[in-house]
Image (cartoon, rainbow, N blue to C red; front, side, top):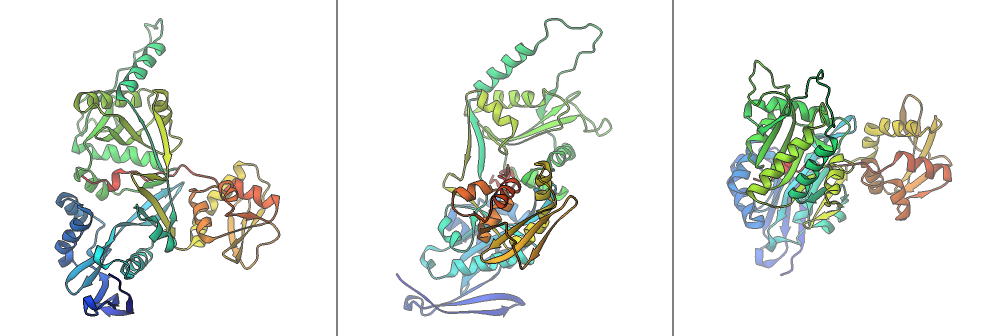
Length: 459
């Protein structure tokens, strides 16, 4: 079946901007498709549509979406032919940590068009409106996970992250941990030294949420891609049941009370089917991670006996431990057919937000400041000037030392998905001088970006 769009126009519908598409196929009798924000009354029909297309989410997961403390029905964009929903996209607004700053981001979820209505331009209109919704809510960029890469690339989306994980046998981890304990055991002990009491590792209790929040926040600064969680989002996350167990490591007795305080919780791990989704500690003791891993591996062997997988940023020391057991660290663009894509809506706005990070990298590399780097982005000239105290961006000229590249590649450099060195070797960045090339390589490096899987994991 072949069809074409004969008309597309923008109208105001119930106070919202809506796009109207008139299908040219006679089989639809020139049916009119309206693309607009969803209403609460659309929720049952949206659920049926998603079930037909994806066989997901389950009713439990869908109810959890509606209970998200940040959710509004208008966060969904729907395409309707009459009263029938034939297309859908959901925007989930979040802040992500990026070094020492927080960036507002829109996550694009569950975007699809009914098979019989594809190649009509409906998906493009859905995406346009979803992007506009993100921009209206202050997002600097959009992020999505998808197997349909080519469609989004045509709309300006590019690879925006990597899947980082290690995998190994739980028995190998236990063997290494026990061998390490034996090797580190001193031959003699001083009877005057008070022995360090062993940690207690057990399943968490809901009243201990504040301890998990404290540990997560402690580990947040300096990460690239971690979701910033509020009290409300933590409650929602922990009530979703999208994980199997939460283990806590306690420096003290197993039974804690409000009076005794929950600061004794020095680490936690969130696990699902042998997959360590998140592991955070306060670094107060060297045995926190080993003790958590020992409990996790023992339970995995007893219950499922499957490999243990660790999701964590590239460079996390836990990956080294997994590799030392004979495991494998994987950093891949595609996992299970899924690619992480992103679109920075205004790269210059993002540059202004992260320019001090570029300045810090230049100073750490002992670059003589002030220093300037011209930027020619899709034919337009700018100058990035780094000084000992600040960094600024000016328009209109690039100077003699500049780099030439597209805005999409520049976005990837800012996000640390791509390094300047990578871009040069791929012939996607050209430097006018050696000075420009060296400065670009210094300030545009690949970063250990990692979007935790826990925040959007299905039950």
